[in-house]
Length: 520
Image (cartoon, rainbow, N blue to C red):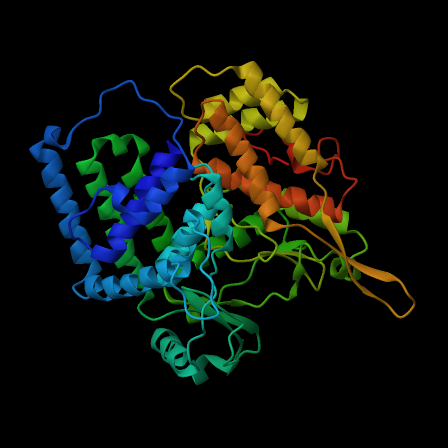
């Protein structure tokens, strides 16, 4: 089913990009869809006869037309022509990369559907870069070759000129001289949706300003509406696609990505997390940036600048604290407690978003991506955690069965044996140790790290095991597990001898009667 879902989504993306609301061709006409079907097959079956478009009711047709009209209205009159031109250029350049006819000195790349689609998404800009990141973070929805390739999706763009950024800041917050004594004109980072500048308030506090790029909201709304409508049309013309919940996935992508555009929502997330830290008595050991509301709007986010090092920089961490083990336990316990006590959890705790600050505290940053766990998943994760603490692999299998969607009976004993093998593989993974130089006294300097793909591959193994046993897990569970795998790697780097199942400092062990527990 996931293969069908990706095939249909690719067709929807290609159609939405190149023809706006023009008639939708069958998905097999897409070069990327054709390549996808050559390399993969679907293991799903269905017992019901496929419905024909002729069986559609007038009410269904009216519903589709209503959605098309609403999407066109939301997108605006200028969206389709400009995006169609950009899509034409992006597709032409991507096809040229694989064409046997090349300029002198260049060689055609061997065609790969995941690589071609990733290149196309990067060239299509902000919406599709974010969509690529959605694919990369959703191994429970998409095939592994696409999840792995989209880990490379680059969200780094040429920075805007300072005069453009200045106009946005002043339009949103008023004259710069009224609020800031200094803003660095060179950005700290520039991504598809926003760029970040270091600054200092007139009151003396060091801050960073996250500035949304101009017209990016209109661009994303137009693209996402096109994708949603394309998926609706595909489902209407080919009713068998309905069982893949294609338009529901497109709707989820739309709402998730548009939420990231609202910096006031991100500010609210940060403030809720800071309130959580206060209520849990954690502010002396953990923090998140303070938000400066008077200088924050939907398009500008001004927050405290946290100075520190990445959670994988073991050498630098040891210059800050002589007890890195306690530090990573604090970070893990904080995240675990937030999952148990907050309505959402930080869903992107990669090493760039989890810092060890110069004062020894743990710093969580970037709250644009959060996950929300439904009651069914929440209860099943609780069962899964209890079974894991006991080493009960069949119990873990049953908990996953309670969480996932399945149309068939699952062999729980076999599923349990498969889970045991995955857990064994996880335990055997070690961080990379690389020599990075030699000091004056001849001592070899080394750095400990881990490959981002290692986390993804481990998560894909979990997804493969569940799907091989006839289950389909919700995306929020994949997000939970991926964050847990990040922490698993941090533990191997900073606390390699720690036994998380017996160490009394672990929050999970102190909360056996609670509803959820971290998985490491």
